Amino acid sequence: MIKKVAILANGGDVSGFNAVIRAIKKTAETHGVECYGYIDGYRGLVNNNYIRLDGNEKASGILPKGGSIIGSSTNAIVFHYKVEHEDGTVTYEDLSDQCVRNVKEAGFDCVFTLGGDSTQKSARDLFLKGINTIGVPKTIDNDVACTDITFGYNTAVSVATEALDRLHTTAETHDRIMVLEVMGRFAGWIALESAISGGADVALIPEIPYDINKAAEAINKRKREGKRFSIVVVSEGAMPKDGTASTHSAEGIDAQAGISVKFGGAGEKVAKELQELTGLEARCTTLGYMQRGGTPTAYDRVLSTKYGAKAMELALEEKFGVLTVIQNGHLSYVPLEEVVGENKEIGAVQGGTAESNVRVVTLDHELVKTARDVGICLGD
Ligand code: F6P
Image (tube, rainbow, N blue to C red; front, side, top):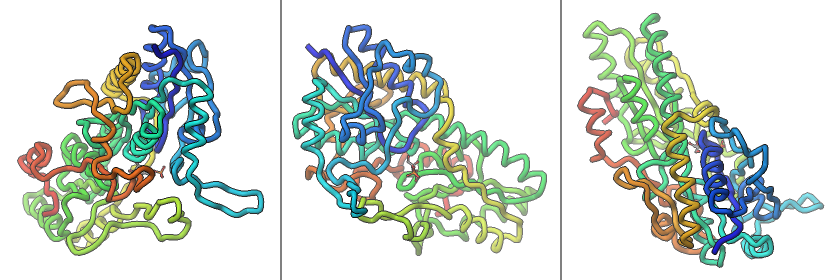
């Protein structure tokens, strides 16, 4: 019988974090289980910093709230943790044993890990070291393996759709090409789906390296038909056929922490080239963190609640080392072992890299077909 559980929210925030926290907490309360939250994700696990959530006023009324009431941390990998020493030196250390000790001493029967591929890789590794973990798939990029959808994604697509609707009217007024850069480093789900929902003419995603001439041709064709404006959606990870993705300079990037690149500039590059090739004025808008903040959509509130309640149910059934998923529309779970794919070694490659097991858009996916059917140019 489990008596005491803890939640940790990790990685870049999404709308829906709080809805999952609330659902776990409420389901725990229903079953008389004490519920705690680690502060700032894996950092809280390392520092043994947690608060009680059940019965806590601060954990009430949070369903529509963006962000995470227990914080979150990015780049906090307990197997390769940045330690800053008093003399100013920095080392990277494996603090996973300390985390195991902290969980055992606190008496948590289960730790829920809300996060993307990197978070779930650590959750699986900690499970192998003796912590009962249950993952819940989060990320606006929708690229966690084994699930059809992550919480936070629907809100991001809806923010991008609203942006496209607004860009449409200004594009039409000024006869311009409006480029919208959205997030998605390795997976183009946000770009593809918002291009469909926002009626874009071109969508460029990381999975289909683009030929800019093809995009220009599509815009020129519209021009010949009398439509002197066009809408283009670009994933931050989109890349030309004969080139690489647009990234910021290596300056300020902590390579030792496992962060090799920071994406940025893909939209500006596309806008500049399309202006040259079509003779139409082009402008770029980078949507950025707007996609992650604010209140979740109704869809995300329901999805997050289903995920949170299911996670707590799995804990009550003592099914650990698993991830809650939606497969073919049904709420279910899979072993974390499947989620990490071939990335088996404990403490090995984390998320956010091409090697990690991310779920990308496949060329035979129905969204790709739908996009092509309605005349969206995918740059190929
Ligand atoms: O959550 C994933 C993501 O949204 C990526 O698409 C993006 O590149 C990244 O987060 C940026 O996050 P941060 O600047 O917080 O590291």
